[in-house]
Length: 217
Figure 1 (spheres, rainbow, N blue to C red):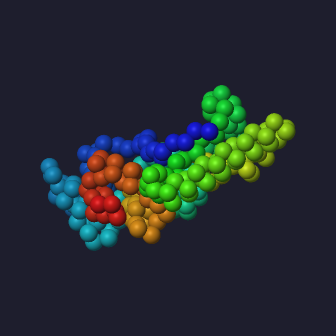
Figure 2 (tube, helix red, strand yellow):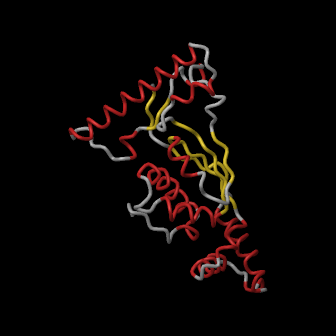
Figure 3 (cartoon, rainbow, N blue to C red):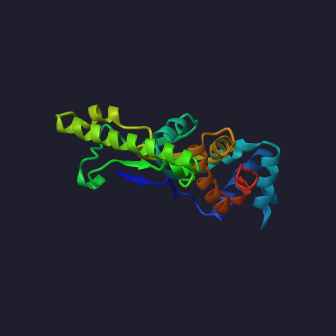
């Protein structure tokens, strides 16, 4: 069994200058103020429309991201609309094959919940979790050895199973995603991957995301 931390990868995102100029050009159609376009006007325009809640304009640009996380987190992610999703399928992926290292991979519980493994209580919880993951892997392998198909055997796989999901959302939907999923009320493992993604979005597209404050800021 392999235990890993979650990861986030930006798959498709245009460069910042291209996006802000595109959004300004589209947004100014609403006001027929195209003549006001000048060097440096795009960020001022976008900041103004966002401050007034006129976010429909930023739906004209989409971003695609790969999340590597556990399946419990993806059950929450796919509730977001409007978006497109493509996810690793346990119906067709047989984790006894060489390309999966002949083992299941799970997302580290200690990472998302900030366990201190020098603390007796956290260590006990972690050991119980790890033992459960190992038992799930054993049961999965036994099911396959007994002649079960991957889609039958997946019924014994845990929520902590590593999965990959590719998400495409427009910028407005990403803003909504981050506001909800970095909030203190969000599940800790959801916060973990959302924080990773938001930090990258803020770095690459500051004008669209710099106003979103997380519990870790």
